[in-house]
Image (cartoon, rainbow, N blue to C red):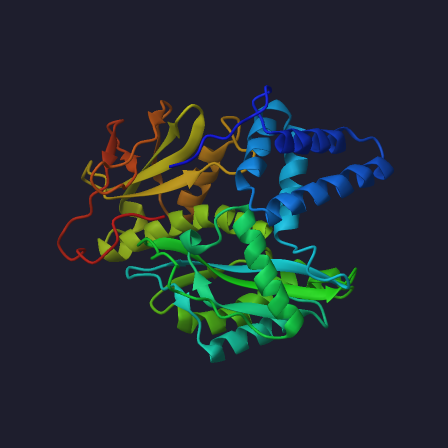
Length: 389
């Protein structure tokens, strides 16, 4: 049971109030000189909280600033992430950074997650160092391909992983992941897998290829897709893939989240075309907003021409600063039309964020304007996951 924490009269612990004060000071700073003052003290306090596993305190401060002061929230969130993925106390001579290499995948079968063979890890290391990382960077990789629910949960857990992988990078070896306590991954048609690593460079030197004078992100991504993708293929048999540019851990995860939304729509259309012999021209897509206290996501229900039954669905979550004013419907519409779906219904009235009581699957909008369970025909589809991630 979660213990009740004693709080100060303001409703927040003193340590959280200090974080809020320092983040607000940084947000209101009028000079780089003042920035450095606040940044140094904010970094010191965050490092201590991460070391003491004070996840709740960090979240208390972030939750308060989210509604009270968006600018200070952005500053604090940026500093918490940057300290968690940087292991600042690990080496006085080196910069250390946790990185992630995401890959989007979809399959009618289970998408693999688990240990990476030593030979495959060695090949991935070669191509990361050749195409993504700057010259002379030390790299350690975790010998595991993670699903989203197997990634470190929270800032303090991320800081611990950074310290372990960072120490391995400084020592010149990869990190073996103990699999006993890693949870089983959920079964989705479309999902993301992550290769995690840490890089170490002499302080102030470039980490990535695009920081060097003759490199750029577009070239790094193209080469990594070609070479790294070939190394990842054997790890994801039976899967269609889309490679995302490796980057700092939190940035890479956000980019994967953003890229996974249109990818899931494309995967859904491709899946229905093969599983139900229903090409895009025979599909209807129903788009609707879903709310809790505010707009949380859009959901897309798919039906096949001649039937009102929702056979499949996709969730399009709002990310970052997106809200009711963001034209997500136009983005979804554009992706559907690129896939060849032209029968598109936009429902303006909102639905509550609901899930099936029996299986936990999201409820999707139907052409009749109701939130219903997506049901694939049983014949020939009994081994296929029920919905996309």
